[in-house]
Length: 70
Image 1 (spheres, one colour):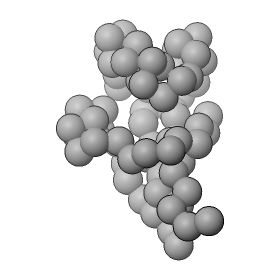
Image 2 (cartoon, rainbow, N blue to C red):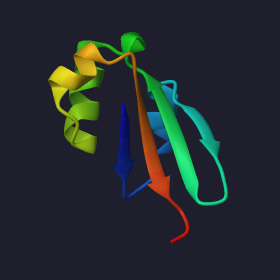
Image 3 (cartoon, rainbow, N blue to C red):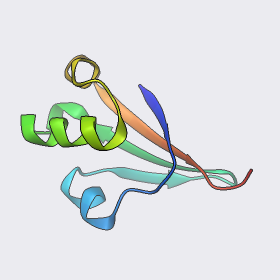
């Protein structure tokens, strides 16, 4: 699943959720392997990024995308 976000995750979130970070000329990408998260971490990601908890429990990963150049 892919979700567009308006802000970058904090360095603490990147570390805690083992996000794989990449970027191109116009986007920053943050890939989260959801199977590696605890229930509490999935709940936090759900609330912070506005993704349904049901989706987070059924998808293998989540890619957060922030547009850097419009």
